[in-house]
Amino acid sequence: MIGIITATVDEYEALQRKVGKGKSRPSVSHGSLGGVMEFDTGILGKEKICYCRCGVGKVAAALCVQQMVDRFRPEKILMVGVAGALNPELHVGDIVISEDAVQHDFDTTFFGDPPGFISGINCFNFPANPALRDKAAAAAESLGYHYMIGRILTGDQFISDQAKKEYLVKTFQGDCCEMEGAAIAQACYTNRVPFVILRAISDSASDEAIVQYSEFVKEAAEKAIALLSAILE
Image (cartoon, rainbow, N blue to C red; front, top):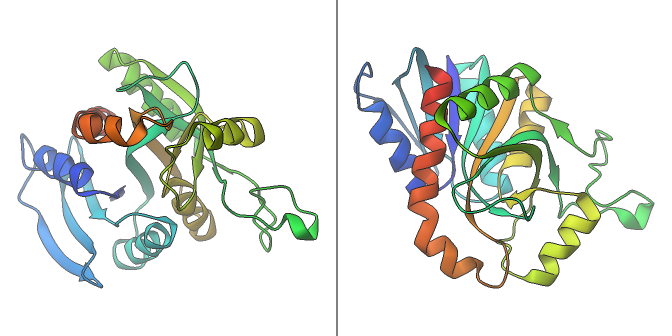
């Protein structure tokens, strides 16, 4: 079984529409956790999947991974959704496949650590599984998507400020930013589950990000889920 995690309603509903077509079978509800997380199972492409809407933010994302691992024992986990662009070569609808993921808001610099360094496990970045990363890239090419294998930055912040965007690029060399991926990566690392993060660009993470997100989030979510479906085929 493969685990699939989304964060928002738009992402989850796009996934549900795919699971409900073709070779899929009706999903079976496994209830929720705290009224937020929704776990279901089904078939997507050629794979049996368990999938979930975890909610927004790092705590929800990490909790979701642990619940998914404990309940369903997935062989691998794919996070799929939308993100803001940090790299100037990325535009709305483009795809970022994770090379690695970093928590940009984790800060123990007072103790001499670099920004983003996760003390305790002594890790700055969490690399994606190479096989999953390469399979995602091949699927993106087959769909004719403009994509990039790059660094995903995660924090409990919706980035919509040009100065903050420039700081993230300068400090972490990130390609896109979102609110769950690196927490999922850390939880997968802890549980020794291979992972990859797939993000479609919904906005520019600049001063116009909120307006752009509202306009393009559904389109970006559909594109991300189409990539996921191509991978599982």
